Length: 209
Ligand code: AMP
Image 1 (cartoon, helix red, strand yellow):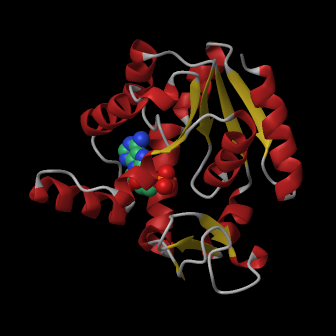
Image 2 (cartoon, rainbow, N blue to C red):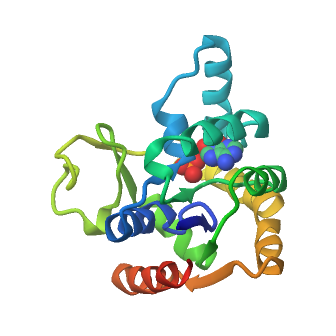
């Protein structure tokens, strides 16, 4: 069983590395950010409210996130493990996750802020499949995964990125200590080349059983 959490600031490469882990271990990649961007809540007013929160770089309320994740983790494809990307983001979410399923390992992608700013500025997302890419690795203006049109994320605008960092420092960074105390934290230097980071990440996931 591999139940893994990917932790790290916005733009640290969680989504990109999660795709690699998925390919290697055949466990689903659960990105709560992507879930929020792609799905609509039944209640249209609540849905608008939630999308506005995401656009401002704030956090969607814990209760709503916990429900969404609980439902997703109950699906059959999660029976042998999963990789959570972007959840938990608060102590409350982490406590909920522990009470629901428990976690085998937490991977922290450590990346200096200057590098992150550069990465987020160059991030392009596929408007069709949602995959993230960096302009420096793109050979054409199309999504390498599906050929779809590429665009930027609304919340990658510089002022929103600043807010997302503040939110990370305030609400999410404290999780590092929580998981370190539980003996579950694995740190990976996320500043190297994509291939080097991937190989370190995969080695950590291999050891987390
Ligand atoms: P991400 O794609 O992980 O960067 O998430 C994009 C945005 O979705 C975040 O800035 C939040 O507004 C929202 N979001 C994603 N995951 C969570 C979460 N676990 N708790 C609260 N808000 C979240």
